[in-house]
Length: 142
Image 1 (spheres, rainbow, N blue to C red):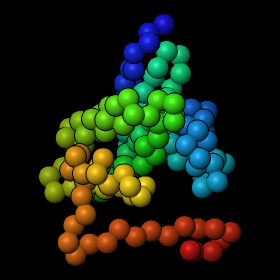
Image 2 (image 1 turned 90 degrees about the vertical axis):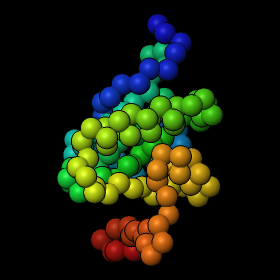
Image 3 (image 1 turned 30 degrees about the horizontal axis):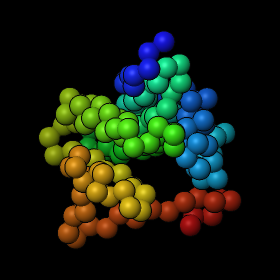
């Protein structure tokens, strides 16, 4: 049993995904009933293992040609501040460098206050563009 953080290029299992989402307080925002199908549609996934536990994750979704969206970057709170987010983003960057065609778009929605973390990975605000999104709730578009 290693006490180092190990990067594994794979999509999290449903159980790992749920545990990480709950650990960072996302359970209210996630539809776990469809999460397994969503995970299967991922273009790329990365998990971080510490001893026998998955403590971080990230994935890439999109069409695999023009659009790549970074999703579900999560690190269990007791492991935050130890460079795990950097490991996750490094794996995602490597995937994009190897798989995203020229002029592809990659992006994400960052939690408030986390913008500077993502800036160092080439993800920035762009003049003339505004990130926007909606949520389907109870059959209504919000």
